[in-house]
Image 1 (cartoon, rainbow, N blue to C red):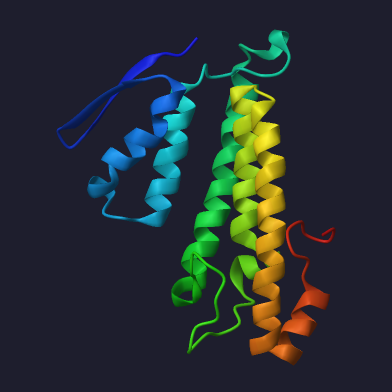
Image 2 (image 1 turned 90 degrees about the horizontal axis):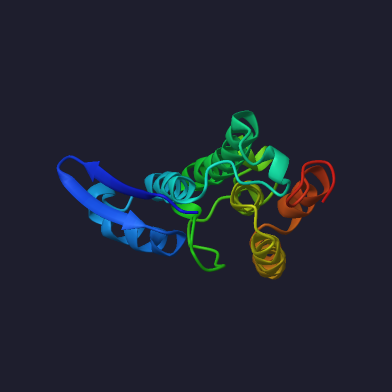
Length: 184
């Protein structure tokens, strides 16, 4: 079912087994990566992938297909890479809670010219890739819950942005979709 691995980085070795411990690994390696957001995202999903039965899919026939496993992993990495790139591109405007800062600027370049909320889009794609990798419908329930939370958060954030940038953000909303390019 799940394999055991030992992760060793620069002499720091941490044995682990099972899907349940991937959060613990990321927490213990936090000092090694010194709080880098993108490093945490990448590490989280690499450890998650190693902890899964690599290649598990919904159809038992496809379970051992290396190409499908690789595609699932790539989908996850693309989603999280997109989220991390969007976070870095947002720079000092980013906040974990919806707020408009004193010197807030409206970012419409980079990933923000594809969708208005690329961090959320990236995480949703990452969850879809993870659900396919793990092969559990539980992740699709998680996807629905996370999507609902993101939609609520988007509404709050967009009210704040419309207050700060009334004309510019109204035009931005007309030009760029919220989560899915050209669709929503």
